[in-house]
Image (tube, rainbow, N blue to C red; front, side, top):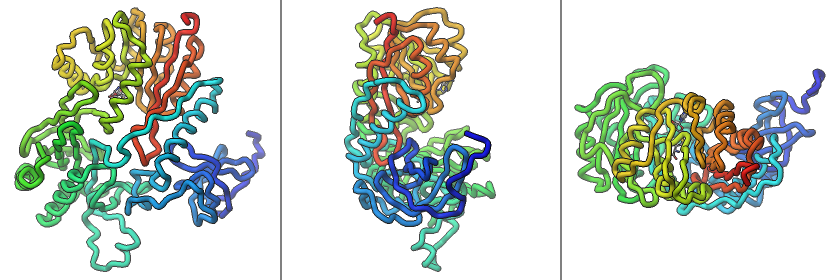
Length: 471
Ligand SMILES: C[S@@+](CC[C@H](N)C(=O)[O-])C[C@H]1O[C@@H](n2cnc3c(N)ncnc32)[C@H](O)[C@@H]1O
């Protein structure tokens, strides 16, 4: 951009804009004299009056003051907390439109800023059900409650206890909720029981600013296959004495509750993971199944949060791998080895790469459970392992975190020259960047988005690439 760049908008000023499309991240995109504005909670087709909240050279951000003419995609969000909660960004759009927008975002990401040519992007695979699908929810306790307009007009309201979800843009206040539409009725029941009990017994919530108080997080997990629920209450110090009666109460009154544990996180970092775990009642693990495999899940295990869609995602990855039983397969970023086991059913040998020791431990246990011996696990940074390995896999599957693959990992893949690559991605932007690098030697055959997280902007995508001079 030229040095004498003149901004077409001013911070704090208001403009009327039309929303063109949605960006990954959930915001609407509008333009003022070709200057891009990201507008939170806006939908394509909305004409709205907005106020500029941020102004950078490449783009600005704005918030809606008034919707002058609503998009035909708009609907009333079914959840009462939608206006404040940071969980679901797209509840105000019906599911068919959500699906169309997700496919469009993947197509757009593969066109700009890297033009990947004429890529075959299939329509997204829908989720069913698209409510109550989450098998894990993490709620925070706080000593400062986010006050809704209704709360503000109620002088009796208690402001010093909340159990719920974050409001975007605030870090220390929590929206107190009594249900979440993305979890089951039984999980909602547990949420309410824990909330009521904690208030009655006057257990102190942890203050994110003060670092004082006991209760930090409530993490619920439910098996899709058995219905069993595991309750994990994360506290700032061991709290067996205070929480044991609650644990017994939950086990006695909610038949699905199979176990209650207390994880202890005495550190300041706001993470729902403990350095110590105390079993309060029942069992410390539940089992769930993805496709033909059952997995043991403990409070801190990594497990896909939408069990039913995970099976569809893995079946897609397996179909794209096109294995015949003779191949050596590398599975990069393998987590607890869930995709790895799917691949092992059809491959001669699979090598799983994963940095988290605890996930590798789970992966080993999962393979042992099915007596799968033709799998090897490499614990540590994939970047270092890849730089050292001399072998050549036939097929490579990669499922990196949101940041995508490190450039050195992409380089190592180009040198290893697997015949086929299956790329599972949770971020279309980094997928496009990495495909652009891989295009040096690979042809993108097909791209299949999969909807794992209805009502939110998140998109999972599987891409199949073949070595160009091998085709
Ligand atoms: C998107 S998850 C994929 C998990 C798994 N494929 C599944 O479907 O359950 C990404 C995984 O990459 C791992 N990871 C992140 N950085 C890594 C690195 N540098 N080397 C190896 N693994 C890494 C994370 O611990 C996480 O388990």
